[in-house]
Length: 600
Ligand SMILES: Cc1cc2nc3c(=O)[nH]c(=O)nc-3n(C[C@H](O)[C@H](O)[C@H](O)COP(=O)(O)OP(=O)(O)OC[C@H]3O[C@@H](n4cnc5c(N)ncnc54)[C@H](O)[C@@H]3O)c2cc1C
Image 1 (cartoon, protein in one colour):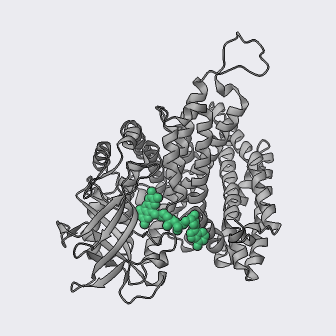
Image 2 (cartoon, helix red, strand yellow):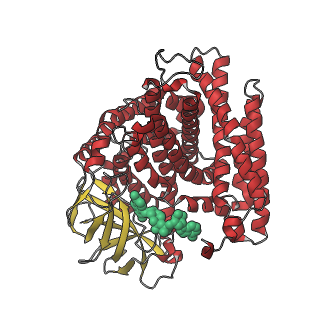
Image 3 (cartoon, protein in one colour):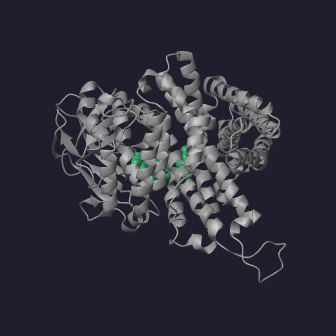
């Protein structure tokens, strides 16, 4: 197995040179931090990922989560990882000191989560699920419930989940059937129903598990407008946070998945064998709105999970391509001459470069969103806050959907670099591919993400968020265009942007004319085109920083030149794809929409 999970020089380049994370130190919340503490945090995460998570990545897959008809258990290494993360304070390092956190910026947290996911995603989901549940409760519950449930989620004493899906309601959350009947205790309800596919839904790692559950209060309206959010603990918890009797949340089974086998994906019965108590969070019937606060965050994190797998697969492929000797250059006709490493062949370099460009562009996009999140959370200027928030909202489906689809494609490229060896489980790429597929499915399948982008985010406020994004891009394109070496790349990115804008104008007319089905039928290719434009821009930003470093006399000429050439490669090879999609969208193509189900 490879020892290097990711290119740390590149991660530091993104954090310090492109995102300029040190500028976050101007906010009082980060006053105790410095470049030194950022470096230390990043290094601690790298060490944990490489020395604790990664060495057991394959073992966790082989052993898998188990269900004996009653209890769910997870492989031993996940217990050790949990312990390490607890000792290191990794469950919620961004939250305030008084809540047990270290007040680190979201940008740095995103980078650390990326590293842990490079090490093992099954394990990362277990750990970071708890912090996510805590944040959700904190964002919408009252003081008493926060005090009762949150501290032990942040400390790593308890695990956390997110329980939406039911056997007959996945994408269509409005059809959820779980019910909540008021009990004598104020704000307390008897929960009844079945939830399926619940990540970290049951396990033997933590003392208790806290489930945020979407259910319908008896008599509430049908559809999403009747859904409320409840905190449902596996074991009851008193007002002081002490764990008490079993709360009748029972595991009915675990899924036998193609990947993420160490991660317990559980079917849970609530209240099947006795009273199951749940506590209403926030107002009744606003459950989905609250849940979406966590989901939006979770979607960017799904992009991180996906890109982490792609990054490790790329590192493995790169190492293999440098070591694997096979054949000779096409111009060398001497069969007795030594064989050359496959990286000598331009087609192998093409495959590596496609991975490198996608990974570097996508990771940059994710850190960019996290960086804007930091500003939104910390700044006082409401107008600027709103502008940045709208950009993050617009880019979230790209992080999730293009991040996961693109990562899977990138991993197929990594496997291809290995030839037959990649198809075998001896190397980690096969497992990474199996683990990675789910990221395009969960947290809202990618088709739904595309509909969210084109159907909701793009038209919001008459297209304000698109205008904000295009303006930010325009500034960076103009700056790059001032540099002689970057001008051809900037021109190409500009061309892509122009075509995307034209496609948006064209589709808007369709939407405004009331042809909603036709408008939305273009959602997936639209998301692909839009994301390709965004990645071309992110790579151009990196190239600009790289050119400035070279102009300032940096000695790291290979590193910075590679950034410029990567941006060029992406603009020249993926840019035309985005333009072709834009032209197709404007051509009125609608075969899939018109193709009748009976014609299949
Ligand atoms: C490993 C794993 C972990 C998971 N973890 C959790 C978890 O922790 N908590 C949780 O609540 N859920 C979890 N899920 C469930 C996951 O979120 C759902 O699987 C997902 O939302 C899709 O729902 P579904 O499987 O019912 O598919 P369906 O809703 O049946 O969708 C099938 C396909 O049809 C498409 N489709 C459906 N409706 C539409 C529509 N209206 N328009 C266009 N296309 C549509 C979808 O895009 C998809 O491609 C997990 C799933 C897996 C596999």
